[in-house]
Amino acid sequence: MSEWSERLQQRQAAGLYRQQAMHRGAQGRELSTADGRMYLNFCSNDYLGLAADPAVIAALCAGAQRYGVGAGSSHLVCGHQQIHAELENFLCQWTGRQRALLFSSGWLANLAVVAGLTGKGEVVLQDRLNHASLLDAVAMANASLRRYAHADSAAAQRQLERRKTRLLITDAVFSMDGDQAPLAALSALASTHAALLAVDDAHGIGVLGDQGQGWGAGFSQEEVPLLVLTFGKALGTQGACVLGSEEMIDWLTQSARPYIYTTALSPALAAATLESAQRAQQDHWRRSALQERIRYFRTGAAALGLPLQKSATAIQPLLIGAAAKAQEISHRLLQQGIWVTAIRPPTVPAGTSRLRITLSVAHTLQDIDRLLTALAAVWPPDDAAGSEGDAADA
Ligand SMILES: Cc1ncc(COP(=O)(O)O)c(C=O)c1O
Image 1 (cartoon, rainbow, N blue to C red):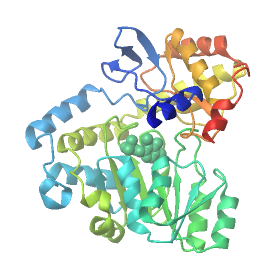
Image 2: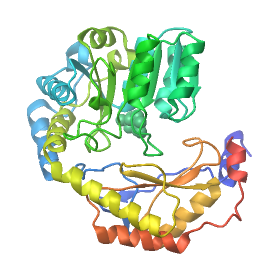
Image 3: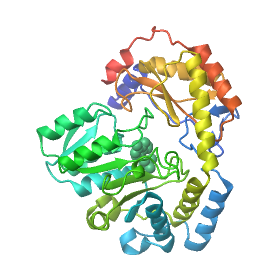
């Protein structure tokens, strides 16, 4: 047996093997698989139902007609088009920031922030449950990673008191937990300890704030000097943006390798994102309908005694524990026509595998009733699977 087959078998035995499921058709309340079966979709990040919105699709097509599909080169060679500038200006106005820089994914934007603003040996302090891209970026920067207990500003303070910290960085809304970072406290701490604060609002943009400006933009540029937004969640497209002061964004333009050495964001996608961001800002009904669905799910889940987490956002995880057990529960939901992927290590810490249920404006309340009925049939998960899966990965 080859080394790779052996490794793959170990993954499978531990309940940690991953594979793509092929779907046909656009994101929406339902998913259809290659064999034609339909499932209610409770794991997409398309919280506002914009991924297949007709106005966003029309903007993509019009953008492609006018600017082409591909940018042809990086932003700094000849790939930066008028539509990119229009999108940057809109995002600045929406979030109250001076200047913006576009990226073709959130992963690249986070690499750019960490690697562009820190150097060899400098301390980057992060929440323990930050997104993988933020953690990995520290290695690229050759910086020194320190972590504090999840959403615990007192723990962050202890770390800041212990050593000079260059960058304090946190998810605004935690991607696998749905809860929100204590940004007011972190901002005060960063300012006291002369650390730069950066906030990744991938899951807050469009969803939180009275204009959908997100959780991070609820704070001024002085309080949160660097803000990362991604377009692939509530905005329903793809790409990302870093926002901040003129000087800091200019510095990133000069120095951030994930900006300089890659093809510019597709101008057609920039056009689609401008439309979807405008929809997200103006369509208050999307946010209120989403909030109604979140409340409806939480009320129903509480009545069933399900272990709800402290989340007021579209991300509503149900913790299970062992990876194999989470996968089994996910399969049993599939049999009832409900698609919720099990999230396992290393995406989440060992022993905290879960169903990451996400809600969307596309769901009806009857869809949520169906989800709750299906959950009632599989809950509580019995302990038979033990924790061997997680131990193997820990
Ligand atoms: C908090 C957070 N930051 C960054 C990313 C990466 O964004 P993208 O999918 O655009 O690369 C994600 C998504 O997976 C995320 O959840």
